[in-house]
Image 1 (cartoon, rainbow, N blue to C red):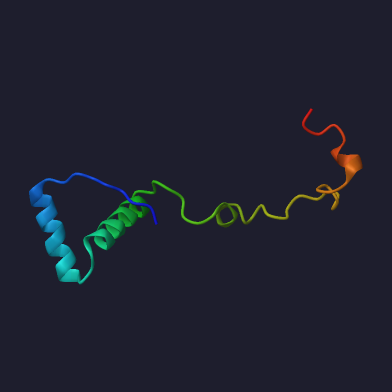
Image 2: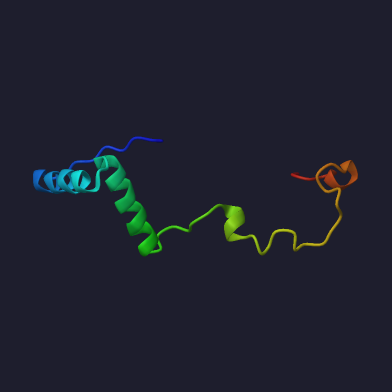
Length: 79
């Protein structure tokens, strides 16, 4: 897990500490939950992996099965 530092006004820090005590959680856990709720509620970021987002497209293309290792098919690739 990465670390994030931020500055809070003393009144907000006190409210955060109180809310964390009331929930029996750390301030960090409460802030993580608040950020996750904000992002999810406002649709700021997709949830899930790339595969989760595009799972309906996985395997929908027909083509040769040897594309990743066929020297004949790879000739000239990237030039």
